[in-house]
Image 1 (tube, helix red, strand yellow):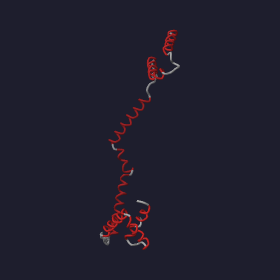
Image 2: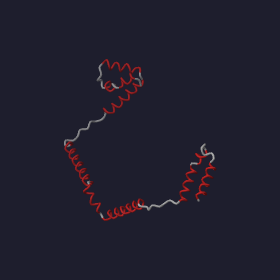
Image 3: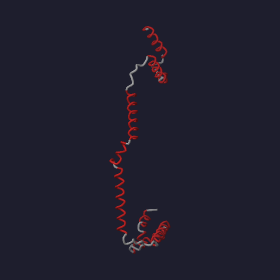
Image 4: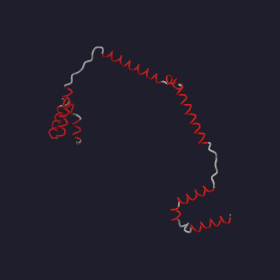
Length: 170
């Protein structure tokens, strides 16, 4: 669909309702002779307009307005009643129901116990053996870096120096 088709298609309803000037109607008719896509579009539009023209118009009864607004008032009143039931004042007595308060109290006690248990752990000094294991783990994790490091080519020599230093101290 090109720009010219868009220009003509926006006026198809007015063309079918014969609301256009003679010049505009002739222009659209000329375009329709050469454009199959617009012909198809116009035909589909014409068919749908025919369906709408076959509908019967419905006229409401005499008291329709009055009945309609009464129903609207009833719906609004019902909605307001439901909102009042949901308000805090109507839900508040539930919080003082014996089962609810017992469960809430038990949950609160457990929560406070867990908080104090995990935050008030006694301080424990880490034994030397665990520190050595942690250092060895760190060394093991960094082994690839150590193996490729030019500064630590003589790792065994450095290790022996540490052992000798411990022997001298011990």
